[in-house]
Length: 424
Image 1 (tube, rainbow, N blue to C red):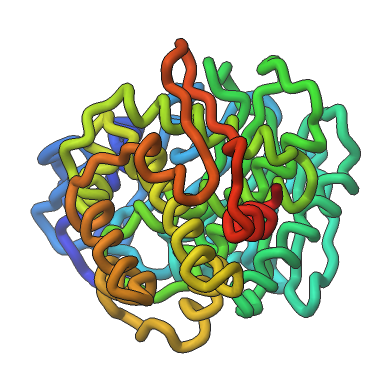
Image 2: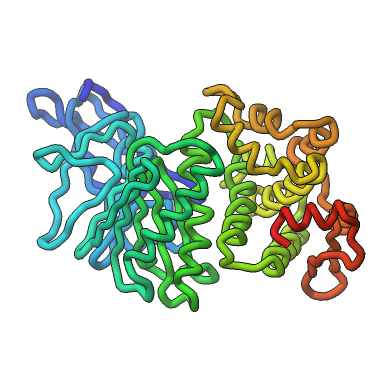
């Protein structure tokens, strides 16, 4: 550690606030072991009067708030997740981690430990460690990609079900992108440490690690189907955005478009039928109508964690749906949104490009589609599905308490072909 006099801990992340308040008993020491005389200058920020080369501190990981899951470190009962992004100072770019655990506990990570049990962490902000008692691990190679699952707790599905479900989702997204993930992908599954309220599951993909927390009291009836739904969304994040080298906030794409691709995936897997595919989109549209739409998707992405507006997700998903319909109609079913993902990973965008500019350019394959992206992504154009869908053979009825999306009664041959390509 180079001599320094200032340390700062992350205090907010993904809507979780005051994370750094958990840091206590912070001390710093010089080369000779003398006290560098630290004082706390703000929440999570510490300064010393003398140069220091060693620090010590305590982080109190009490029961987390449901709203902060799964984005922060926690330890409850026989298990927990340690996310180095909120456990070590921000200016530490690499470290060697060693864990001293209670008897019977183990630690799992996408990082392989060395012969001494130490983990060499090159990117703390992407590193997750799953610690606990009786962690169960399984692994396999998925078309050359290493996949591992680690589970804790008792479930109404077999451990092998999780690995099988993750495997077919991995194969699906390898075919979608044409890009083989490097290294090992790790999926960690644990019971949520607190009730998730209206949610049955929460997940985050950090680096090459998927963390999935499920509420065992959340009323889930078909657990295998729940795994399909959860994995269909979250595993795609291993590719988008985590395997892309793009700059800026383009959350509308890697969240909103991912929601739509995940819906298409569970339709392809026959977890849902075409009627439920349309019902889901109708529910999303009702959610969209219940919030003001006064920001472009680019602006909404920039304010994702500081605004209650959900348009990054719901409007992003609806835009992906409409975009998919447009490119299918323009190409007579020969091109779909899926083709843009293959282009994304096969030279369609340059590394370190601005994410918004690169993806909008990639999507704009014709003048009509360029106008579409300008209206609904770059600008705050209001989505009116009643007016936009009839040309594709779909009708939206919003006359009742809930909108209903259905196939039109009289379809042209082109509309039939388009809807069949969509799964009708």
